[in-house]
Image (cartoon, rainbow, N blue to C red; front, side, top):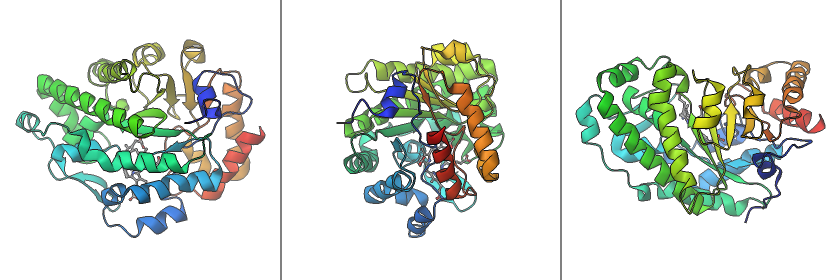
Length: 346
Ligand code: 1CP
């Protein structure tokens, strides 16, 4: 059992803390030489995710290197589209490429029903990681948001503007909602299995919230995040599991994010500098907000910007230190070590 007195749980319980708990989005990844040494052994990134022992090793690497306050499952958000038969591959320097993306409404009619048992390899990884962590380090399980998973599945790859996806939802409104409902059910079943396997906290990544205008964000993204968190909060297995939402720069009001998401904690993108703390205070915990690119600067600049963030959140009840998006491969691990020290010494 994870100790509910851990720093991470205390912050999720909206306690005002002297030192915030620390973890980093993409804390396991290509910026670490230890990661690259393991990654070399696999051609396809998803093959590596399908090996629970390797996932366990990778999830522990940043915990051991930087003594962080929370671990995150090593996997990817695209395991669900892969289980739906869309054929996800990771191409060197290009990111994910789908063999069978959604091209028309018939492709949605013909989709396999999501079978949570197909992702046993993920739950096994959760259990392995959980068994290797000390009691005071909670484990975060995760999924993509229904909208972000739909965007990759329709686009068939990553994109700057997701033009094909935006066209598709304009032309196929009803079928898009059928697909989003199916993805919401899949995320619920998937996260529930992760909690059964040992995940203490859930994070939902809405990484492509930013490409929707306000109306479409509410219709295609927020509505389904709300359905998903509602289902999780009303299920015996997951009702007590804290939910963190990372919504990348959504074009909605702060009030909507706080009230409609159903999340216990909001993970703030680095560019959400004007987020109104007073709207969130005592309603949700907050996480993140530091621009990851600061980590490419000299140490004095890292310290200055980190202090600015810590000043901003120092009286906030329930702040978790993190970056405003993931660590990129070009960041020097020494700077992660330094950043962690700066936060703990503040
Ligand atoms: O070749 C490699 O080594 C692959 C790099 C990599 C890694 C390390 C990918 C491919 N995924 C991951 C792991 C991962 N992905 C984790 C666990 C590791 C950790 O955080 O410590 C998590 C939580 C994710 C989540 C994820 N995958 C997101 C949401 C977070 C975000 O960055 O917004 C997204 C959008 C993905 C898709 C994905 N997977 C991989 C890449 C390169 C991408 C992004 C593609 C794009 O730019 O659209």
